[in-house]
Image (cartoon, rainbow, N blue to C red; front, side, top):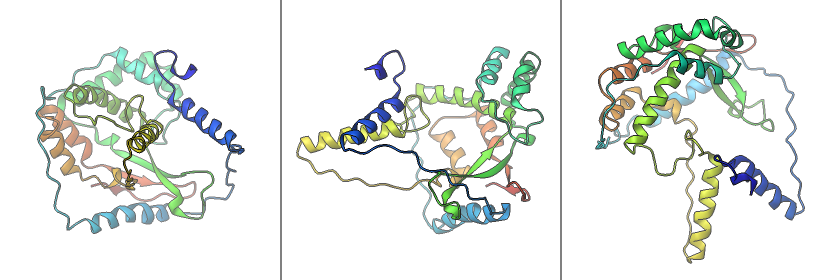
Length: 288
């Protein structure tokens, strides 16, 4: 099988091959959904009322629920300070970054890549000062939010068909990736990740989750057991995370302390976002 040759199996090609085989055996043919050409008629204020109102409604409905009990984790080692990065580390991050950029960026990404010899040492200094001082620059806490259609086949006249996309500056994303890499290493070393993640982990995705679910179901049926499946819609989970609770979990369960915890606190607090469309833009909206 070509999909498992080499070091990195391509699960996307594997699933696509399985779908094509099963569809062809049923006499059906895969076709692409027609792209919708309707004009986007909503204003930035409409986006705020929909997306922010959705989060406010969820929080209001769960306001009377008692807070979750945070289980302390016996970590072998803590994370009290992030390691410094080198100019080479920043060069690799910039080189791998996609060439798209945000309107908040002072310069387009392609220009930053061309001037990488000049800007990489400066960005490395900014990153190191940020993590050493436990302070995330206030100028990098603003997000520009736009709406993107979830699927081309969905109704563009229904705001529920859109997802909010937060655009951040290149500098903020570089600092985030540097911290993410070190925190991920800390979490993996202490076994803080689930045994079977389905997202935000290398070689894991919704495709691998579906394959694992299908395998578990087939194996259970072979053993004569009944399989029950409960599906929960957590699409707004990331938008409703309480920052204070998140910091508490980082400290007690993940054993993040000292300057590292101070950096996360600075990163999460006093953030703001602005919703934009081609013809309108909202005022700054604080995030909590």
